[in-house]
Image (cartoon, rainbow, N blue to C red; front, side, top):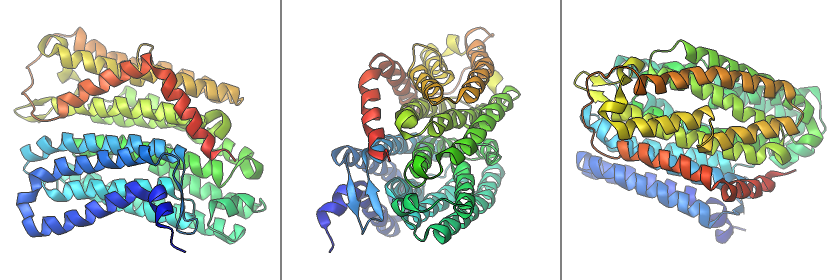
Length: 476
């Protein structure tokens, strides 16, 4: 029997996003270009409302005969992801207007991508998971190449599409093997199935496909190129909302479909190898970058490796650390990309690191905010990123993952160089030509992110308690 209350409790934010997206298609078809400007603010409002509904229905529930199961772990990720999506939309408006690509379709693509994120976070069945993955992926491919007159954007979209299709195929093949050897696509039924070699092969293929979604090594090769080539507001979206959602989904699948009683030791070793490779590739790859967006791309790879250490620690030890670390990371990332969007000269957007020289003397407020965000993403004290990285270190140590903890510390020390290099350039080098003023929410996002990083560092305890409570909802 169809239970409307259960559906609303489990899927209210996604129902709102689906309705808004379909209504937006209709309104856009009728009003065309007249809908372009207002669509961004309406889209941001819808995403904020979806985040609010995730809080209202925090405990979620089950719906559609078990295909959907929303719990507090997913609701936490939805709240953060939808909020990041709204900020990315607001930042995109002015950028796209300057490049004469301001279209209501951009807003709809972000909404449908966010809907895909909600579906995968609430999925409790492999079929629902794959439906959400494709909804997110197809929207993302178009967003990456949204600036169709730019060769870089077209190249980024093509690379993302080709490699994304390969990863989706690997994920689907893994799902088919898991189904074949467990007899079900339900997470709970898979967890109860007898472990075997075939099930493990399917699990490995699924891990490979999910590693692409979070840009973890060795499935990371698309990240620097897409970050550099795609429009900056699109990259701001990619680096935050889908990253948060995909990492939490990664953790949810391992914790619920392949829990400790089935194959924990097997997947812990595999994810540990991926985490180590990601941390090292990201840290060393960023050392030689001169483009800010490429540097942030490699930084993203390294940070996904840190998060995977918490995933490998298991639900009881690492579940809360995943949420805390990813929240700290996306707050810093949305602010840093806001900083990239804030820096513009007559020739176009500033992307070269050396062009930040002497920023503290030209725009002290922006330089100070970016410094706080760099301190946060580097894991220094005095910003929330330190709490996030410390929680991951603690989870890895308590789980006995000493080699991963050593690699984490080593890669973090290497990463200090390029983060401190950026700070040095802004504070010590001789100033260069000042930037042109940028209208819109871009600068506000930088300052809000910096304030959030400091505020959550000071008042971290309530958030960590909330994350610990949310992680308890996926304990096997």
